[in-house]
Image (cartoon, rainbow, N blue to C red; front, side, top):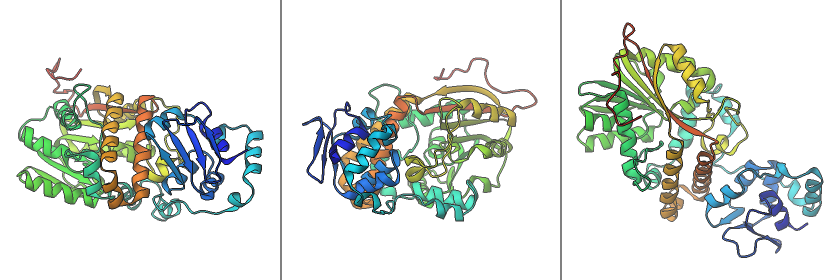
Amino acid sequence: MTLAKIFEKIVGPDAGVEFVAYDGSKAGSSGADLRIEVKSPAAVAYLAQAPGELGLARAYISGHIDVHGDMYTLLDRMWSLTLNDLPLSEKVAAIRSLGIKPLLMRVPPPPQEARQSTLARLGSRHAKQRDAEVIHHHYDVSNRFYEWVLGPSMAYTCAVFPRQDATLEEAQYTKFDLVAKKLDLKPGMRLLDVGCGWGGMVMHAAKEYGVKGLGVTLSRQQAEWAQKAIAEAGLSELAEVRYTDYRDVAETGFDRVSSIGLTEHIGKDNLPSYFSFLYGKLKPGGRLLNHCITRPTSTEKTLNKGGFINRYVFPDGELESVGHLIRQMEDTGFEVRHEENLREHYALTLREWCKNLDANWDEAVEEVGQGTARVWRLYMAGCVVGFERNKVQLHQVLGVRLDEGQSHVSLRPSLDWP
């Protein structure tokens, strides 16, 4: 069995992909719009060390496999296929065909992979020091790189598209405004935005609603960028972004709290204390808007320790079902007043980020290196497929800390959300 034929079996013979390998072998659909090039024995060694998703990802990120054509299309076609799907007899035949040398070759994971041993030395999952390292791993890549990928809004969370043809900037503005309207922001209110990123929500609240907002982030680069943007926008009297763990916020008595993309980093065991902390920051009658990625049901694993996303993108990230999150909110004391799934909107958002990365590919590679750029291309294209196929969802849940039984929510709110 030739090397190209082996990779054809891994990806799937009906995927419409051409395969070429360093040994001169070819397989698959000749002249297809997608071509996978196996460039060295190290690609085989990666697959031998970590069969399936992780091995393929390591080989691609390290440059020992090249993908010619659209990454999204490739991942969509091979969505459920891995080496583990091969029958044992075919695995044995493949190993015999390869010879012993590439199978014995020990190749280290690419440097972009988060080392589990390093994280373990920083404490158990979601300990403060370990959380800080995890956030640094993903968010402190390069503000310039994020500007190319995210665009002027610098919003690294699901946008809300008012129309199918809306621009990314329109959609991100719509997202922030949807959060503002669900929170019923009014001039003079105080907003706490936990996991605030580059400060988009606090700046929107200050500029559009006259709200005094405090955002907190564990990324020093995010905080520095946000403070500069706030000053340049003339919003320093109303908006602040602070480099700190949300658990270290001392202020209390906030009218509103927003959490846009933080809950994924909290961990299942810490959700009760997380929601309790946010509940304690609110005045009676205050509102929380929790916006996060979720699993579609409670039957999936919340954490895939050996998966590509956990190793390269969001170490320690855990996704729960929205039902579990709502139960935790209710058990904390929140009355849940509204919930919606924005799954399709995240697929559209990611498509725009993928376009931005492709449009700035050469500059991105020069800024962060080919390996990191490849991580992002693979990760974002894969996530488009995941949201489209309902492997993951995005939910916004609105909760209220009751004021002696009163929610202070209108009987039928006159808002432009369902």
